[in-house]
Image (cartoon, rainbow, N blue to C red; front, side, top):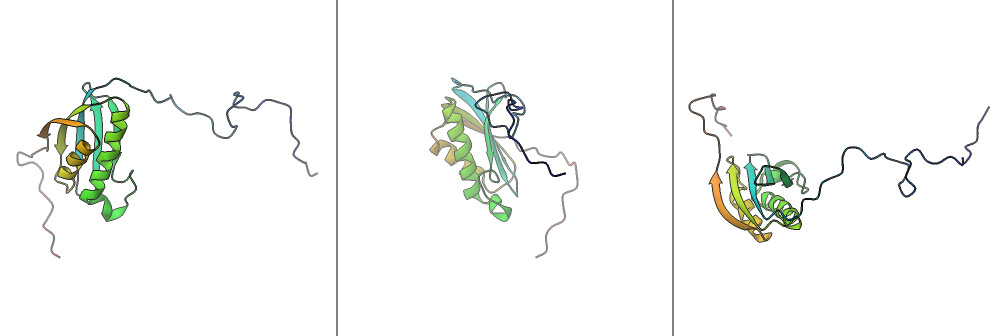
Length: 149
């Protein structure tokens, strides 16, 4: 027996009149934090990518971006240009939340360190100070062998 799909008069399973019946909402809604004027910009510059996270003074994340989320793939993620674009995106998002001045903490040996700081300033954030928080080993793990190209 072949059944034909019939339109039913039952309400949709989502329960809301204005919501589409496709995807149910998952998780809590994003909190909008307005009025956060001071914060910390954490820049993690690795050899393969650059991550920019902007937090308030308590450490709660306001915005973040990486070279991958901005649209770069593969080896282009490790360029200073990609790091700058990631910093611009994170900085613009932080400005929407009312952030005005940031303290910058840079970690890692990547190529995008300086460019990310410059683009945070270009996004309209006032850089109050720069600190290098790269972890240094006290003769810990053996480093990888040198490349022979």
